[in-house]
Length: 164
Image (cartoon, rainbow, N blue to C red; front, side, top):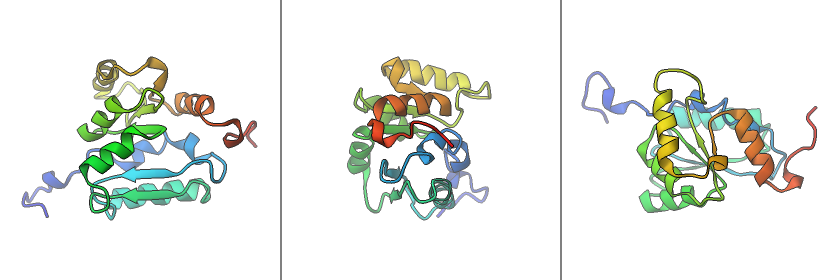
């Protein structure tokens, strides 16, 4: 519960709508190719529920989403899950950024929500990407770059050869 009447302490760092465009290539994967784990503090949060609903509807159920809230997966569990994932999407949270820095070099790291746009804060993301020490090929900020990285990483059977 937030004691601040302005609600400032309850503000979410990353809005789900800001990550949706970046993750469009994930929603186009064939059934059973991917499982999306949403690591979040509160799985019942409106943003988390909105994100899950959008991914499941857009993928037509082909990409199941599992929510790992802090009640199910506390700090060390969450960090381990993120650092051993094929794809880590880091929003504005410092925890997600830490996971992106510590992720295996074989992981794809997507920095959102700015998606490489020249908007307020984009210099911040360029600096974070440079500071992360990640191999350049493993860092993406746009849906097109994510699609290319997924195509290179995933087994050929998991990515459709042509789109309808």
